[in-house]
Each structure stands twice: as C-alpha cells, then as structure tokens.
Amino acid sequence: MKYVRKISDYIVAGGIGAMVIAGMQGCEKNNEQNALTQATQPQGAFVVIEQMENGGYTIVEEYPSATTRVVVRELDGNERMLSKDEMDRLVAQEAVKIDNGTSSLTEPSMSSSAPGLGAILLSSVAGAMLGSYIGNKLFNNQNFQNQKRTNYKTPQAYSRSNDSFKKAKSGTSKSNTKKSSGFFGNKKTTRSRSSFGG
Image (cartoon, rainbow, N blue to C red; front, side, top):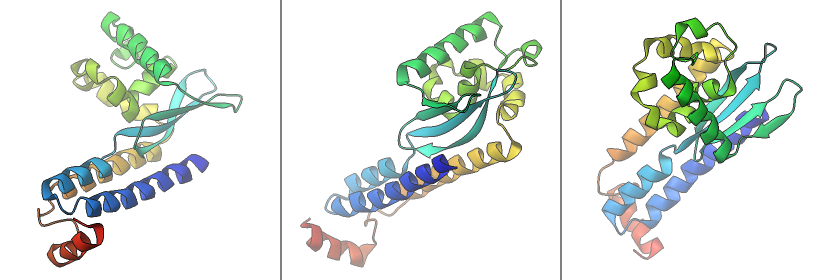
C-alpha cells in the first residue's frame, strides 16, 4: 500500500499549497479565486494496474493527483511507470479497436476475453482524461457502462475510486463558491494583506 500513502501525501501537500497561494493572492480578489480553484482541482489520476493470471489486467487502485501517472504491476511482481508516449499509444490502439468493433469495452461478444492494458487504461479515470477525444464512443455505450466496474480488481476498489474523485470535485465546487472577500474571510484577509504586502 506504499502507493496509497504516497498519493495521500500529495493530496495533503496540495491542500497546504492551495492555502498559501490563496493568501499570497489576497490583494487581487479575482485572481485569488482562480488560483485556489486551480490548486485544489485534480489535474490527473494516480492509477495502479495489475496483471492477472490469465494475462489480462485489472485496476487495483486510483486516486486524484496533480498529474497523471500509471503504475503497472506485472505478474512476476515487477512494477513500472508508463511513460506519456506509451499511455497515448495504448489509448490510440484501443481507439482503433473501438472503431473496428473489436474492443471488449464496447462489444459484448468480446467481454469474455482477458482485457488488455489499453482497455484497462481507458476504463480508468486516467484513461478518460487521456482519451477524452474518444468521447461518445465510450461514454454513451451501454456495454462500456456495464463493463467498467468489472475492470477493477474488487468492488471496493471501484467504490473508493468513485468516492475519491467525487470528493475532489466537490472540494473544487466549494472553492468556486467562496465569497470574493477572500479565502480567510473579511477580518483575516485584512491582516493577511499586511503580512504579504498586498
């Protein structure tokens, strides 16, 4: 679970960073709101994918992250981080399969086969970000909606993923509704201005 601890550290650090940015922008109210929103909004996902006995892959864990990173744990226990080029290539290859009607993500007849790395990557939140151009081909496909949760190692992993991204999104929405008087409130904003020289 070392990856879980690591990403949790990033989330905490991100929260502190958001407060610092908001305080430093106290002199410019509109800029403060924008900076806070950008600092708290997850820009990517941290995903751990594991190879299965049948040669297919499954999603073990995923959490909001400042950047998108995907770790693949092979059957022999070795782990490697996918490069951006490799992720883009896997997504593009799976997109061709979707167009050809040979992807397990969209074709029920293909769902019984062991899902490949590209299919699993596109099932993850990271894949949805990387392959956003695929759009309606996936997200309006009923088989994809039915199949997606089965591409996670356990129902709990699927639920944790959904919950963590909902919370991240909720936090961003709340930051957008902050009053323009400042992140720290009227009285404390005045003090922070003198401290930061705003």
